[in-house]
Image 1 (cartoon, helix red, strand yellow):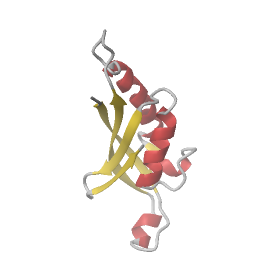
Image 2 (cartoon, rainbow, N blue to C red):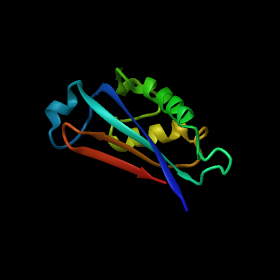
Image 3 (cartoon, rainbow, N blue to C red):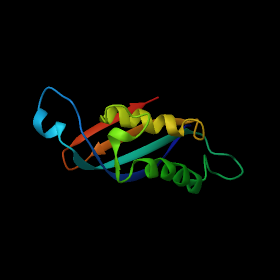
Image 4 (cartoon, rainbow, N blue to C red):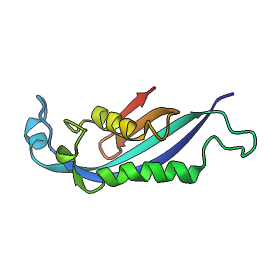
Length: 120
């Protein structure tokens, strides 16, 4: 059996984006409330009954949240254009060394119905 354990978080951030559709509003600085979720997969330790201590998962996810929350994403090193795809990849890269069993990173903007999921 394989289990999945997830931690959700949110962050508020601004960015610009060069695109071919809805160009005018995207070129101006604008912000979103982003919701993220990091999922790890595996089997629980037989002694502790846990795949990973949730406190450790929250601690590591919060480190990434602090890099993104109330930031101008265009200036955050390593993101590139602040697309949902690049945000998923950025979060994964920040966590892959401390959480090697990441199986999924999700970033969404509920207000506009946009969502991206990176699956390993």
